[in-house]
Length: 261
Ligand SMILES: N/C(=N\S(N)(=O)=O)N1CCCC1
Ligand SMILES: [Zn+2]
Image 1 (cartoon, rainbow, N blue to C red):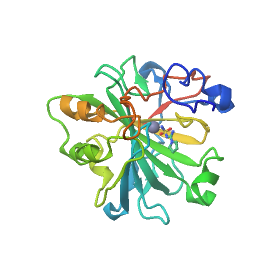
Image 2 (cartoon, protein in one colour):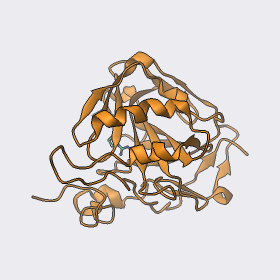
Image 3 (cartoon, rainbow, N blue to C red):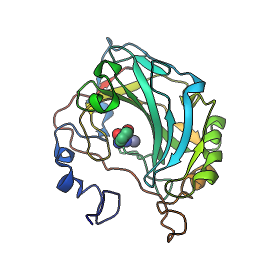
Image 4 (cartoon, protein in one colour):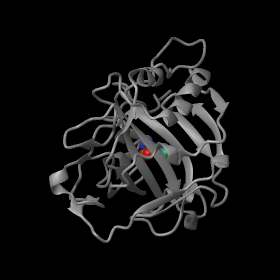
């Protein structure tokens, strides 16, 4: 059977375009953010998240990431403002991380790779449903938060990482309720924004990216916890779930705007 896409040498980012042609598009993500080339846009308004903790449902290991899913059947947890028009519904959050602390993020800022990158995926209900939103340039908005290893870890990350023990292998899912992901936001609301794509196949170019400038801190053992997840299913040979990140893609003339000077 054709090897499904992944992050290994035989099915990794360099080969995704063979089955997913959009992966070679002109608006792909992630990208390298170069502070000297971004444009401060004073018209960019602040973004606002109003999330209902009751919308959190479950946490899942799908063999490629650790994902928390939310009830997005109505405007219950929404993101608005910033570069967005209207309210986008929070659907899920997930992470990308490395096999060591010196890499793991997807976006790279002035050459800095962070240990991990957290993505909060929202979609525009004016397009009916998530599948419809994927086909639209203003269909999806993803808030990206960089994670760096430090000595004052954010207690709120604990909640996600405590659940890791229950979802060690692919396909494992556990209830994950009463969780407001806005507690993960850093102090500063400063962000970069640009138009791009999903960083996994089929790599649809439907995303308004909102990347927060200020990273949040996690502890070394919190990173070790994340790296203890497995790609394999139960009773299969252990295949550690690490390095599930796509490298930066060509910017192709796109403008990256900054909400800050
Ligand atoms: N690639 C993705 N998000 S990301 N890494 O571009 O934020 N997703 C694929 C299906 C739903 C989210
Ligand atoms: Zn992601």
